[in-house]
Length: 217
Ligand SMILES: CSCCC(=O)C(=O)COP(=O)(O)O
Ligand SMILES: [Zn+2]
View 1 (cartoon, protein in one colour):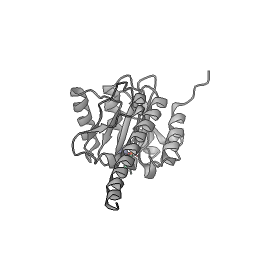
View 2 (spheres, protein in one colour; view 1 turned 30 degrees about the horizontal axis):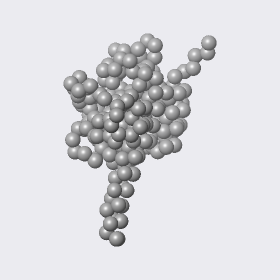
View 3 (cartoon, helix red, strand yellow; view 1 turned 180 degrees about the vertical axis):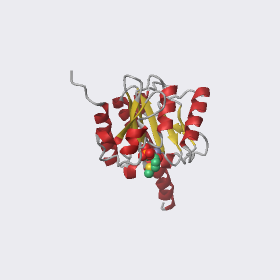
View 4 (cartoon, helix red, strand yellow; view 1 turned 120 degrees about the vertical axis):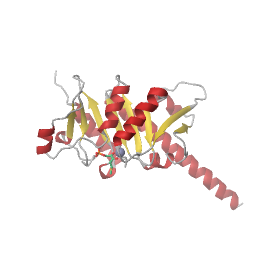
C-alpha cells in the first residue's frame, strides 16, 4: 500500500486557502498528527500558496523538533505551534489543526467586545456538529497577545472551564483556528466557519445599507 505523505494534503489545502485570500502574506498555519503522536506543522514565515514537503517542521510528543536539522535548513516551527500543541492536548481525538486569517474573521471579531461571539442559527452549523432547533451557538474569542504562549494558556484555561461548543476559536484581530479528527474535516470546518463569518459581514452591511436606504425614502 503506498503511504501518502499527509503533508501533501496540507500543501494542497494551503494553496486552496491562499487562493481564497485566507492565507496571504505567509499568514496561517496547518498541522497534522502522525501515528507516533508527533505532528507536522507548516514552517514559520513560508508562503502558504507555494509550500513544498521541505516547508514543514516535525514536532515530537515531548514538544521538541529536529532543531539541528532545522537550523541548517533555516526552518523554524510556526510561531503559533503552542496553539496547535494545546489544542492537541485538550482534544486528543484531534488529528489536524488549521489556522487562517480572513478579513471576515477579523471583522466579526470586532462585532462584540466580549470573549464570545454569537453565531446566527444557520444550517451550516450542522457541519460543525450543532444539531438543535434554533441553535444558540457561540464561538469563543481570545485576545491576540503578542506572546503566543499566552494565547495558548488562555485557550487551555477557557476550555478547561467551559467546553467548546464547536471545534473552532477566534483570535481577535487575527484569525480563526479549528481542530478536527482528520485534515479533510479541518478543511471543511474552516470553510464552514468562514461561510458563517461571510454571512455575518454581509448581513451587517445589508443592515447598514438598509438604514441608509431609509434615509433616501
Ligand atoms: C503575517 S502572519 C503573522 C503570523 C501569524 O499570525 C501566522 O498565522 C503565521 O505565522 P507562522 O509562524 O505560522 O508563519
Ligand atoms: Zn496567525
